[in-house]
Length: 243
Image 1 (cartoon, rainbow, N blue to C red):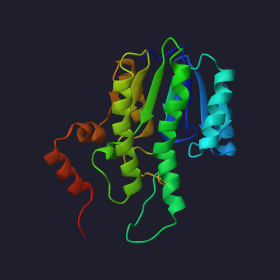
Image 2 (spheres, one colour; image 1 turned 90 degrees about the horizontal axis):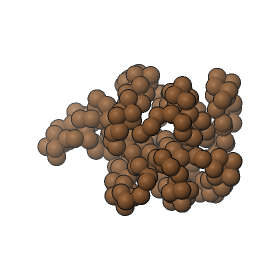
Image 3 (spheres, rainbow, N blue to C red; image 1 turned 135 degrees about the horizontal axis):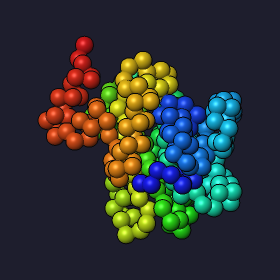
Image 4 (spheres, rainbow, N blue to C red; image 1 turned 135 degrees about the vertical axis):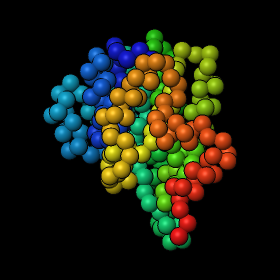
């Protein structure tokens, strides 16, 4: 992937991995647009990086997705990189009943959103010179963490979808990339006080993108994404210890 001269959309770009990528794409010489549900969080990013374009948009809302694509294709006809980064991670006790709306909302943001965005953006991207569609999944797509079952399942489904998308678009100019993070210091799921420092991870992502990697992995996610079934089973036991 060419790392400069693009117009880049990053969903969920106001914090965590998304924000770290915003900083790096700006420094590399790109126009960057970010979305998020909270206007105040987007305003904070705008104060820090005045060149960023912000759009309040909920990745979990079909209507917001349709409106966003209509608005941005008109304002930025050269937009050529779409990064589906927005995500939520919740701890869920499956022995306890929860309102379906809570479950549905997590699925809508993590899985429905990227699939719908791909569908909406493809006609536009197919007209671009260097189009890229990038989905951010997780190392937990390959070895789930039982405490976050819906998150893990949506990321497994997103990985599967991305493989199919890449195959179907193989004869088009659209490059389909999957970014597969390990645990990273971020506010995903509340706060991760463990994992890879965000800057370290984002630097690795940019390096691998520049190298032309179609699957961007790091540490834990490199291991899970390449694990045999036996290795994956052993990893599952390690990250999900029995009481």
